Length: 449
Image (tube, rainbow, N blue to C red; front, top):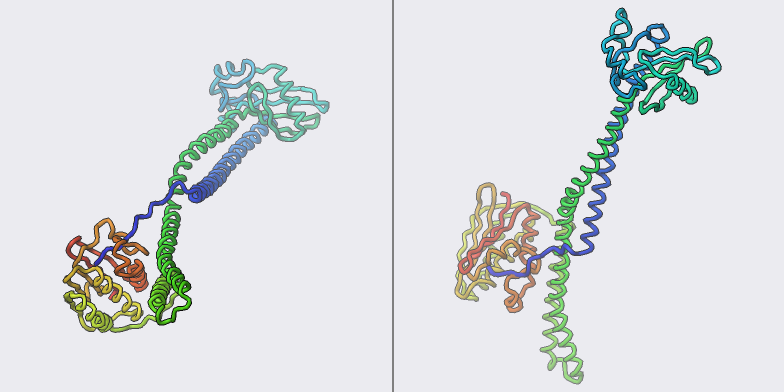
């Protein structure tokens, strides 16, 4: 049923507007993901830290109780028995693995290396108790650091090992119990390093994923922008021609001021014709805009679709025969549709008008209205040049034409099919086209029965 036109919209990827929009999407995605990762990592670290500190606190409490009760005569192997022990303690531990606190006490509750120091009220070291041999300097330094802390529990680093201590007041001074927590503190450090490495790797991967999805996210916006730009250009082009004609004819009238209106009638008719053409174009554009914005609220009611289509066909029958075209129609009676009768009549008029315009000389126009499986199908076809396959997906775009040279002679602005498609979709139907170039073109509007 005729050719309808234009050039395909190609999104401009180099447009700074779209680059800025994509970058904003990318930044928002990355910031959101980074915040989520930080919250997740902080939660995991906090839980792990509390668990490690809880275990250290329990071990320290049990060890303190045993030294206070006089059961600290021996020390079992633990997490760090073979490493990070000062002086010759590691050798002592390697030579006595399974000793326990004395055979009668069984396996002790603590897992780390520990020792106990007693100090008098002046802070002078008076007694040491440890299974492993450590130097007097080591004990003195440990006591100094613990006393300098001033609290009943604290931590410090000595000889590359991490020690946690507790202080218990006694009658003559204080008892300090120390346990080695190097291994468990290392777990927290390893966790931080792991989170950092995993987080950086994930950020690199997520950057490329976010960039990919950001490009896909702005694709509809970019396409809509390009279509809008093309639409404005096409509308401006359509309006420019009648405005030029009106301006030219107005100049002719002004150049012949002394002529009578009757003698200038030709120029006035040209102006009126182009004005009407502009009025129809702006009316169609306004109609499409209202439908797109869902501001148009037509009254929908049940009406006889067969009768409505038949009336349109009878109205156009004279035009069809005037153009020396044959008409073949088949309308199934008593088909009813819930919708706007006025709009469906408009769709039928548009499809028939296109069929007549683009039919070949002494060609034929066909119209059928039938009920199918759960649908009512209105089909309008014609014989003619047809529509090339590459144009079929875009023939419902506004101002789209496949043959610009024939447009002026046949009238129209390329808005008819766009209006028809909007109306059909508003009735929850679909409008499609099929064409065999050089043979026949058929437009089919399908409505839910």
